[in-house]
Image 1 (cartoon, one colour):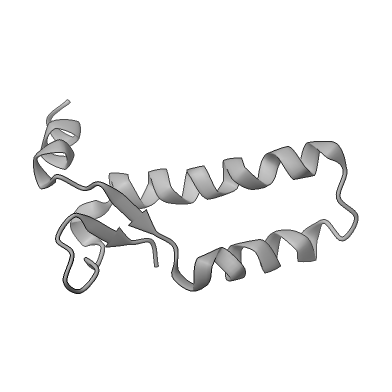
Image 2 (cartoon, rainbow, N blue to C red):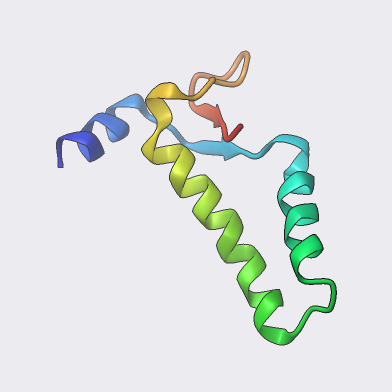
Length: 74
């Protein structure tokens, strides 16, 4: 609970994935060359996991220049 409260106090409103997520997408497509319906549903979940991981580790993430409420999921 202390960690969640500390994250809320930082006031993060947005999480940016570099290159608009092209590296995540390319890695996913490399493992799944033929997309089924399930794979198409999994892709947004993967982006959500990337953002959640970045948010939980926000203290070690770089902030976007000029915006104190945005972190980068590098």
